[in-house]
Image 1 (cartoon, helix red, strand yellow):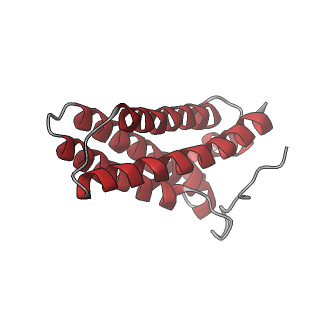
Image 2: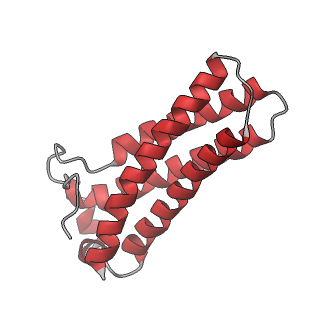
Length: 156
């Protein structure tokens, strides 16, 4: 079960990034181009938030669901895990940054929807999504990251 959840979590990462880039592009374009907010904008932003929520749910299953052997090892000796940079990344850094990114993106989405002026909607969504996107990019275990790097594409 662990391998399946981890593989889906890895695939959904790409969906979050792709939909996130589209949402960022449309919001920045709308903000700087003083464009009109449309149903398409609402749908893309909603898709980004939906993908993000799915990713967080999958991550939480791995984190506290008892599926991840790494997390089981960490929870068996949390103090010891904090002394190991790789284990600390999984135990604290990855989940903290990802949860913060999800919260920032969600708040930006909610705040932007409540704005009356289209340019303000685009502005709030842009700023929040940029912040969330930076947090996500920093927290992903990219292959070049020593000790925590993972494959770009999961093996099934």
